[in-house]
Image: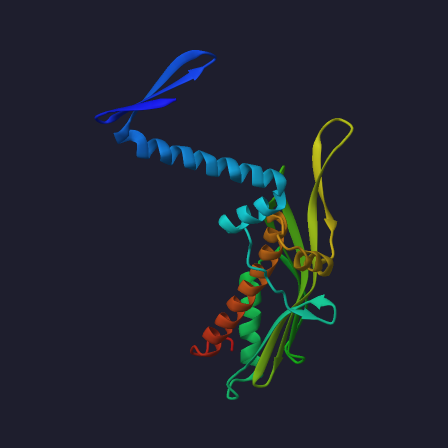
Length: 243
């Protein structure tokens, strides 16, 4: 094999099966050709590496796409998930005024059909109710809903209040087909504690698991924020009629 130089062109001559062959390469395009060659070589090496070590390739993908989600930490108490908040109030405010403010928040945020008021007692300074809400989530094959039932407890004392959400029971929507081929759905109870343990033990939670935990956590955080904001607004505003 030999090469001849002619200005910007290289002619390479070689023999293949006793036949003389030649290739002409323009020197101006040589850097581009080399770049394409080495780029193709690197991609080929990556593919071979992914075939030999698929888990390493998966971890790399998760890191590059930032699929790793920030883990959510739910508040735990005696083996249960309980959301609660306690706040001091101005000692000059009457127990009745604080109670009325809390009751107003309840009626405003839980219209008829979305909860059941179990107890409303000014003397005891307690509001007890059962709430319910739903939110959507998606699996790889279906768009489903999760229903959450829970207890609400608001305790009023002189100079402070506490709001508490407990007995939180998630229910998964299940789609089934009857004997006539018609799809119907129902809800099956789940243990939030077990759900949360599985979530914490999973290094890379599936998106539907993340959606469930995040949906529950965000809902109760928003309720507490709404309650504290409403209490501050009502107890620091001029006395309304009936207070």
